Length: 268
Image (cartoon, rainbow, N blue to C red; front, top):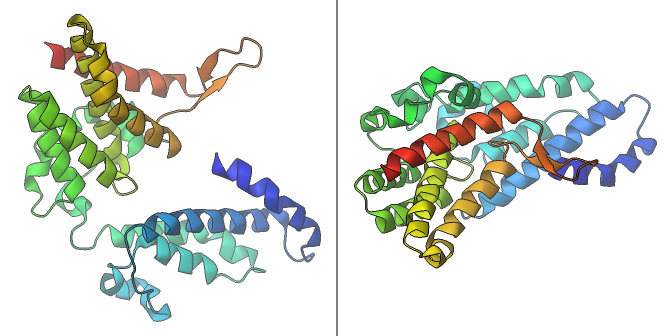
């Protein structure tokens, strides 16, 4: 969504490119710059930090620079590429993946404690849809704060303490943004199921105003973020009927099915 707005503002510059630089290479560098800028904006919210030295970007020294936000490592990797060398640009995704693999082997990574399914597996593979309900988080010695809040929210949820669950869900949501990875999908499903079950309960009690007061903010914030980063499909309007529709109907259907099933469980 941001790219479709960002790139047209830069595209006129392609007329001034040297012949040795193709427009495709320029677009890749522009996309990398946009991603790096947006990541750095979010990193800036975490407070000041010291940028890494150039020599700390080698994979052999990755463990010594793991306190540096991965977005800054990515930024430096992209900006080290010669702008006129398209071969370096084409290798960027492979280098980025190699950097991610190195980060995931660092102390404190959740991938060391358990095998976490990726986003596609959690949505499309039945055997992974029950993953969040397991006891995998028990093996975490020092889990991230957002995950601890999620566990507390789940415990309160199944204990029937809606207000306590709401408090922990709100805290977990704010801390999970841009760090939860594929775990945000089951977290999002639980948040939506929780809000939906509360809607049905409050509707039966004729207390719908409490839904807007307490729960609507949690559900809308989670839905907005999930759509923004691509965890859930976006909806577009059909140019003929003007009705909203999704370009990923199966993905949307599977997510809604999981939300409805969990919401029924919570109501029962």
